[in-house]
Length: 79
Image 1 (tube, rainbow, N blue to C red):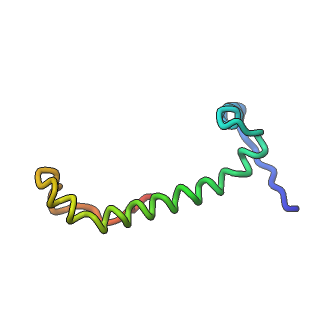
Image 2: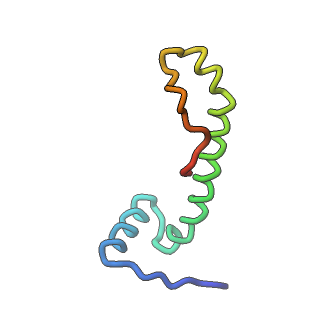
């Protein structure tokens, strides 16, 4: 099975250990799951932005005082 040797500073390692403990996972399992969680996060952001774009006109009609200036950004540049 492929494996990966990753170097952390002492501070980074302490943060990763604390995050793993907070998640109730072993350090190995926590680090293993990180790319999976990131993929899910990106998918969630993409779908949320698409939903927002699809419902933008409804929101603007319901809350006309909340409509931003004409230079509104389209989509999610940074997911």
